[in-house]
Length: 99
Image 1 (cartoon, rainbow, N blue to C red):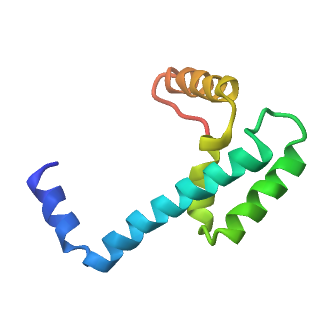
Image 2: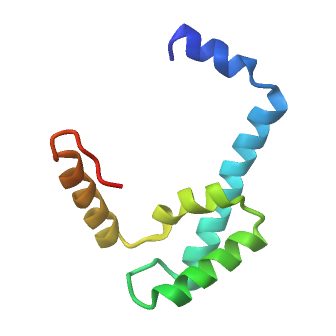
């Protein structure tokens, strides 16, 4: 971490840093609960899976931005590999990224 990054991180109030850690722990617990109860997303029946995923995240009081960042943690390894492959192809488009 560079000096400016450290100074910036230290400028964040301690309670906000603690809340960020707690949020990460809550997300970890929520994703573990999802995997143990409904399994990993395998690409089948996406609507039902996403509804259950969202419901369990809401029950765990996970904010929307964290719910979105947590989804890659509950997909099967084959889907994860496919996403990485697609991202790799997109980054190889001469610096042009398609969003």
